[in-house]
Image (cartoon, rainbow, N blue to C red; front, side, top):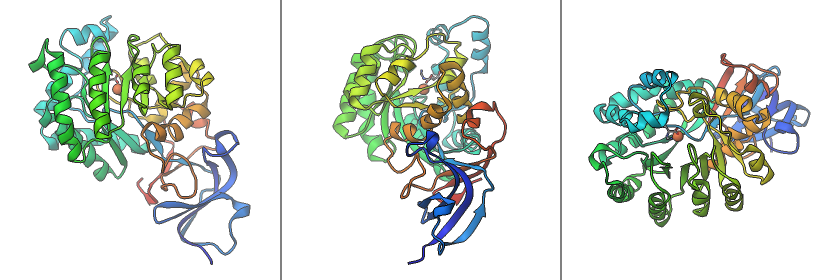
Length: 404
Ligand code: NIG
Ligand code: FE
């Protein structure tokens, strides 16, 4: 039978992220889509001669990669925190600012004051900026609402962003992000509330995963555990802001719950890395926050490699520690600050990022996967990490449909 495809892209340099070659590279390759999925991928010379497509495009050597996946963002927020940026440049630490009532609390006030529509309008340009630089799936956390109505508002805006921009969105419930003013000195009482709101938001289809900020200025391991136990009972996967500013054993804790990912992990020690390896928990590295906070403690990259822990890279797009609107820039920072190789960085925003979101249908150029693709104006995948800035994405395709 002669295949008849919707779209056939020819003469591309394919970074399939699959197979033995570095980057899964195929030099003179072709890729076909049908019904929003990848229907054929391989060498031009192996293309079935009778194959035809409704639309064929010669990419003339352009690089074709899977659509990038940003697996950790807080991009739904209102206002910004540029004043804190200035304060930190003048010597204040992130923790100083948080303890003085700024930081996350100031974004909470701004999100509570914004209507759902305003929140959507303010967040849209950020999602569009990520898409323009090649992101076709992104994770978005709540965590600036900190009450039932406002956490729900954030999660609904996240869903609407996906529909409006035409990207895949995974939502994460992060009510255990900071203590809201109405619970000052009652952190355990607040955790009771966080746990009580979850089933309702989950039943409304708003929660794909559950996260917490396990830190001196966030919640204790015991409080985090309580949230995770309820998530587990509801069958919702967990992930964690772990060991970012100090080592509270967060990585081992989330691994114990077979968590999808332990994120940040600058202060994680060997036992945490071993636990992650044993449970298949992905390390989500966030070099934007590292950079903005002028952090010097590096995540344990060598140990992660040694134990075979999958490493993902994400923007952590948020108004406080990482106002980063390009996932490619995060890859650049991961290479320069963490000495990840360009191949590791690209795996970190494709195959490993998909794993960090529990998504098996994307992240590589393989037959049967979603046709989420980016054609880039570069010849080699390492260039994606080499250029700082620039406008490199020539075409972004989501589920077989051009989005850019
Ligand atoms: O991933 N560490 C906690 N959460 C965010 C920062 C949020 C904020 O400061 O608004 C992070 O870095
Ligand atoms: Fe974060």
